[in-house]
Length: 215
Ligand code: AP5
Image (cartoon, rainbow, N blue to C red; front, side, top):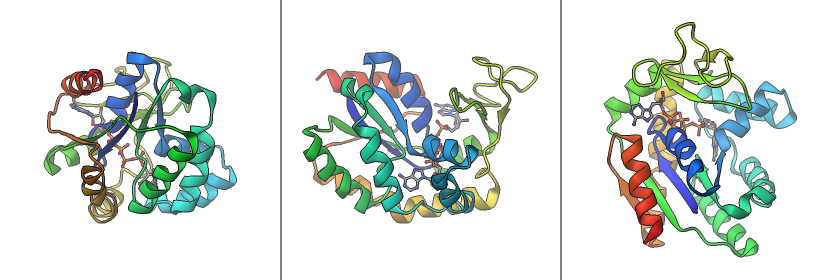
């Protein structure tokens, strides 16, 4: 499958993307994970992105498009991809459209995860993420806790709060989403690709996506 997952911070994009990778070998491509790994590894990209991310602002479109052009050409994308957190602005969506034409690929669907704001705020303040860059399993102290000692169930590394999980950064990320990313809902509606899912259950969301893909 070749899909885009849209949704506010904390809507569950990463959780759903990870569940979908078991389905048909499609890879999860999270620009947030790529950027966080670059920050951790102190690469040039990471140094450039860090300030934007910690303030809850978007990293410049040009940096993101350079990453995505390289990533979408990698061989593991031939089975399909689940874009998690990209595109995030109208210019990114327009550039993605051109890039897919160049690669002779088409999107199957764009899924908007529609989750109420109070649920989102609760999820973001209770999330924990595995600190191992090769794992990055997503936890929640209420709905999916890590081990009692706070480590990852899969790899044993500490499950931690992200640097952008301060109240200030969360507030800014939600504002940025409303201003820059929410307009993509109409963009993809006009393209005839949009499917909105309002369920709060990740399993139900995955099931609805699989059914829609088969049709
Ligand atoms: P990114 O990492 O993409 O963050 P985000 O969009 O803010 O999304 P999140 O990862 O916070 O949430 P999610 O929707 O994946 O939810 P999750 O599954 O974790 O981006 C971070 C930053 O990088 C940006 O602010 C920006 O600076 C930069 N960036 C990234 N991409 C960019 C781009 N394209 N352009 C420019 N800048 C970019 O779930 C959240 C919590 O809820 C978890 O605890 C989870 O366990 C829990 N949960 C999920 N589903 C359920 C459920 N059904 N029931 C109960 N709990 C649930």
